[in-house]
Length: 81
Image 1 (cartoon, rainbow, N blue to C red):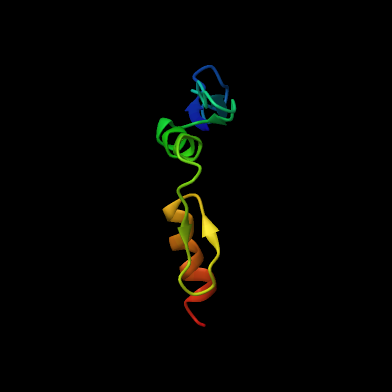
Image 2 (cartoon, rainbow, N blue to C red):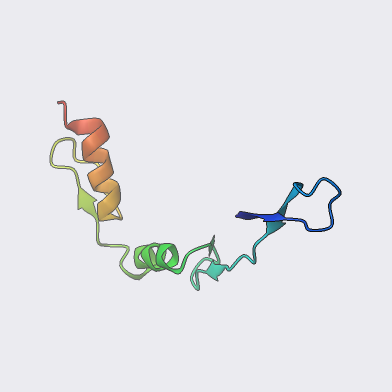
């Protein structure tokens, strides 16, 4: 993520430079995968806590660990069948 900031000591008065923001990392305690947002880590860790829980497409039978992936699959794959 970058932020644009104006530099005051420039001769033209209008030079801009990118400045890196501090990057927070959230790490999965099961597989050490890294995330930039705590919400994404929370969703990811659910797949480790209940691996037997799956969501299946009623049209083609494909299974997913996350319900949002099933919903995305329905919209793009099986809705027109």
